[in-house]
Length: 113
Image 1 (tube, rainbow, N blue to C red):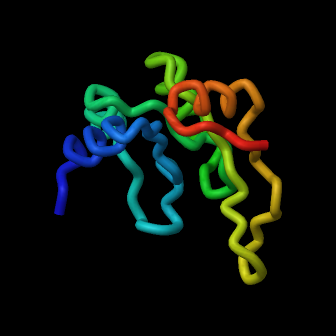
Image 2: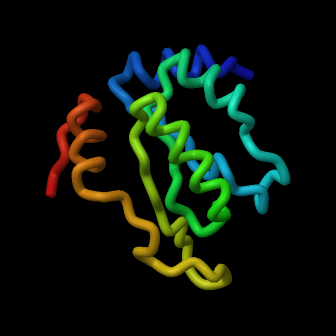
């Protein structure tokens, strides 16, 4: 499987923006990305972290916000709504408009509204 460096290079080479979802959510994989792991990804070109997600505890949100502020990373959110069967609500934990605009600005594909 590819290394994180190879993935970042491929996505950036295609004009993409690198954002990590669920970095503070232990419900899926039972482990968090450590600060050191996130720092390593930042050095490879990470653009942002999903902070606003129901799976991130208040403590994890604060930890991720601190990292984002320290490194000027984009702060995103999402409902992670995939339909019935989960407590997530469509439209909760949204990404603010300025961040969406910055993501569009950094990418190479046009946004059609």
